[in-house]
Length: 48
Image (cartoon, rainbow, N blue to C red):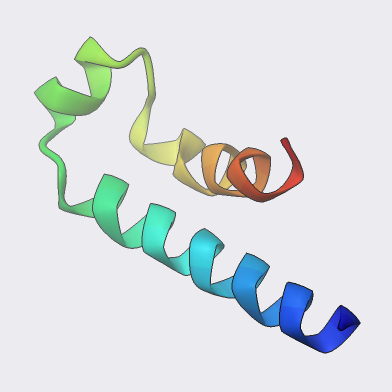
């Protein structure tokens, strides 16, 4: 079960990075996210 959870977390992390990476700087700014914050936000998405 741990492997499945890890795989799901990795997928969620990558999906978050991909989706945020596609946004324009303005869209990210509207959300209060800098481009250099994307990885931190993605990590937070899987840790809660």
